[in-house]
Image (cartoon, rainbow, N blue to C red; front, side, top):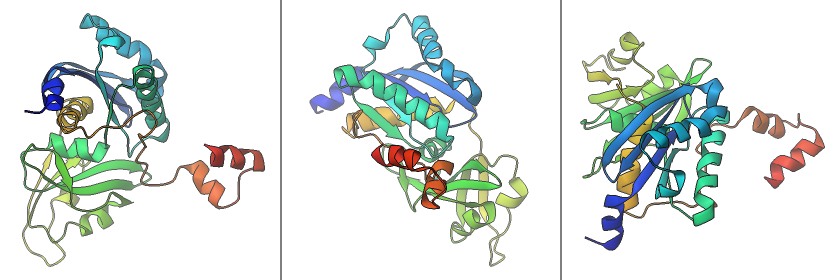
Length: 253
């Protein structure tokens, strides 16, 4: 076992998800989950620090004892992602502690294991979904089979039409008639929906631990969000609908 894998086994990881309607937090020691909580609605992300303090207090820990931070980098709520990522960047920077980036689509796929193929679908609102197809490696970490995409539900399903057996995960539990139907060719399909029964931060923590053992980590300076689509401000910028001062601010950032 290499030294990095050994240290990861004892590392305390704080995992955050602020990408979805309900934020969640999890703390683990190596591969063992210590505690997870649903931290409140998307409108209450401004309470994130107090929610983190409350969770760590229950575990008689402080933020200084956290060895690594696993964070959902999207896709999802633009505002929520920025709050969560800003938090872990601030926690990481003083002592250069590692950050592990996990997408919401990866976390949804991980929660649906065991399966040969998982199609993760996360609501993008306005009748659209983020989607991506995954298999799994020997340690159960999702391996992308295509790029993440934002589209209608029907277009997302077209990308998995060639797969005879697939598990759907994420925000599709209310759409079984559409998701579990027949393929374009009319063939019967082995399809199922697996809905997670625990906070997404738990899956982010689990993936984060494996990536920590592999030294697949980021820093506060290198971690990036996975938006998949442009924000409303970026769209307006591309269309020339923002003032010159705002344009300069976005370009400099």
